[in-house]
Image (cartoon, rainbow, N blue to C red; front, top):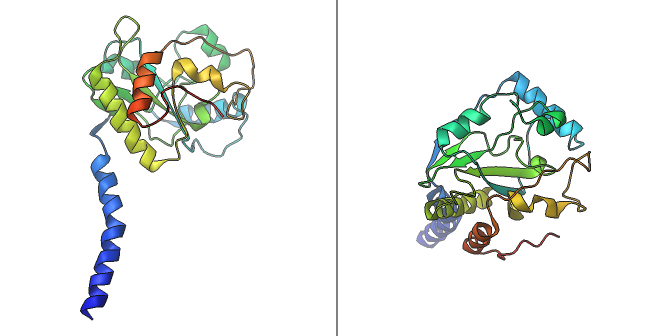
Length: 221
């Protein structure tokens, strides 16, 4: 009887240890949800259909990619206020594609604090051609104010955590999104709808991918 109990305990130990490790790996995330209402859901479903070619009953996505951005806005609060309106103010080129405002799932402050704006499996407009499968992470910074060491560490920990939850195949910078054109990943109905991006920069992404145990250079397959 004692041997059986020992064996059962050992099996339970093996089962629960990975779950405990995953729980320990979850970074501190502050919830700062942006407005989500019937209009935002409708515009998101329209975007999925008109831009990505998907007729979906819900705004649920299956995350297989993470796109890292910088905000060009130098505070977390201003960034969240920018994303909060349902409809996109200004930016005529983007308005022609959709009235839906841009957003992201996470924002990371200069000190490495992590804020969540949307559930990870909810559609967000942040990367042309790839929104349907991508989690967006915005970092407070710009070309003049490069991302910090604290942000590099925070991105690393957050993405490691997300990789335990989802089948993430790529971690890319916003400036690399066009590398997916002419692949099966690219879902954009208008081949001329493109914008030029430089964020968050090659050096940051190379260091981030090395931290994640990935090849530092993006190789699209």
